[in-house]
Image (cartoon, rainbow, N blue to C red; front, top):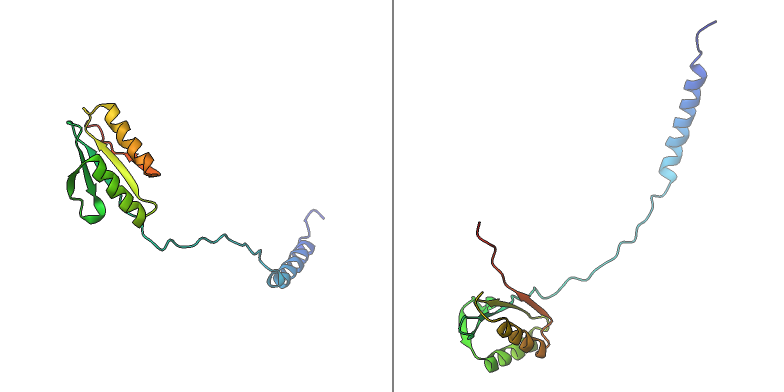
Length: 130
C-alpha cells in the first residue's frame, strides 16, 4: 500500500472549520478609545503685513480687509497692533522688507512687534527666478 489516506486530514480540517465558525461570532473585537479634540470656533485670522520700503518708511497691509496698503509711522503701527491684539489674541504679522533695506531696520520692526507681545512673526520672501 503506497497511497496516503487523506480522509483523516479532511475530517480534522472540517472539525476545525466548524469550531472557528461557531466561536468567531462570540469574540468581541477590540475597542479603541480615540482621543478627541474640540473644534476651533473662530477661523484663522489673516496676517497683517508690515512693509519696509527702501527709504525705511513703513506701510501696513491688512489682508483681512481687502489687502489695501497704507503708509504708517511707528506710533501708528503700535496703535494698530494694540487694537488688533484686543480683537484677536493670536494675530500673526508678516514682515516684508525690500532687499536693499538695512538689516537694522528689520530688527527694529521686529523689536516693536516683540514689545507688543506678538508671538507669530514671519518674514516674507520671494522665490528665486530661474
